[in-house]
Image (cartoon, rainbow, N blue to C red):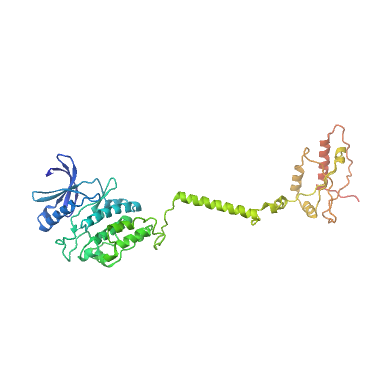
Length: 444
């Protein structure tokens, strides 16, 4: 099948008012989209006028975010629009596949829609049917508005009769449903509903029946998008609520104002106010956070050092304590040991230190278990043990805590000439330990 110089390749879509084909130019090989007005509708005078008017409107809307019109052909009583072909996916299909959508992507798409709508408004054209199904996203992320079939120019009221409404019900503004005058704020409302659906994946009003849906659009305030998605930033919620206000005067004055309100959606609003459904904090720069944390650590260390120097932290001021007072609670008192003086001329001439024994130490000595006494005996080494002097008692010792030196009843063997000083030292030390561990009573 051929339409003018174009050869039909395949059918790519069909709607209530026509069919869309993919076609190729016979000479240049250019790929285009051809929209055909349904045969039954071609006979109606009103539909023919609408189709021709769409061609005229598209002819003057040359913008990167609006699908371009190349030609208009009438053949065999049928009308065809030759338009730009887009390799991509419709926005309603994107919403179904990627719900919930990323906020950055949502705002990026919406700003492109607003650019195309603003250009149309500047040309005096109101789309009147903005919805995700009439928006296509190509493989490069470029958004383009399609289907100006019911678009109207501000000075053309011939096809807009009072009491009638045109458009898709879910995205229609209250004034459209009422059949009143439709201006550019009607497109603002439809774009607000589109943003609501992009973020939440749902329609703000239940559409179980046309009557209930129209009644809700006209009378009920649009619900907060945070009811459907808890992490919605307040700035985006505020923009949606303003765009979808019931009163036309409460909405944005135009697409540029709408777009400007979304410039700082990620950082401006959450600090000023938080909605009752969620708290959204601004994103903190990671390098900045690391610098603040490092600075805080340095300040803490400086304050601690200053406090130690000034002596305001006594548990850190080691100068106010000596090692003995710090370690004393952790080390048990060592019992006094009575040791015989070594039989050596060298040791006799050398003055020996005399350890002082307190009554508390002696009481602990008497209460030591056999296991501890054996441990004390085993830790003595014949090569490292030095002779100790006799333990002296305090000035007023108690009878129970006084260590009495028992005169040995057993004769002490005379050391052999070949016995070295260390061996004698070892024997004398062991005898002293034995006297302490198992003292014998004196005959006296």
